Image (tube, rainbow, N blue to C red; front, side, top):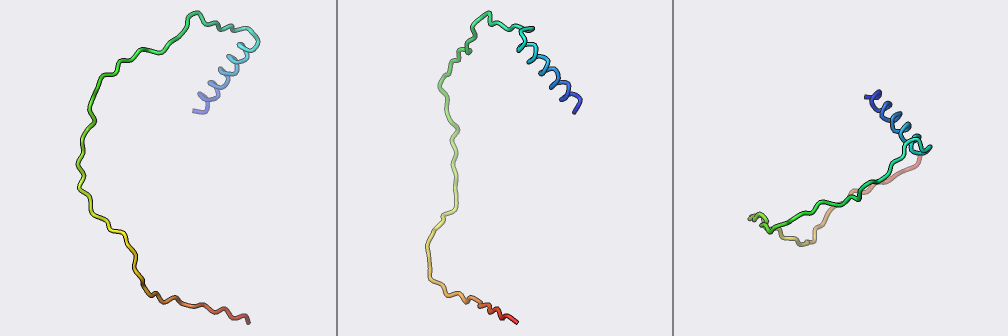
Length: 73
């Protein structure tokens, strides 16, 4: 795989050098354009979903929190 990548890089460098020095001359001979597309109407698929009911609320709760004492020697 490394050999193919290395060869590809070498070919691209040679091509870029040829274009930069004028050895390879690229000229556009014809204008390009995008293809014409025709879009006709369609329908989206329909789905039905039965999901659980979720209720969000708050409540007061008493929680005992431990204390930590650090004593230096």
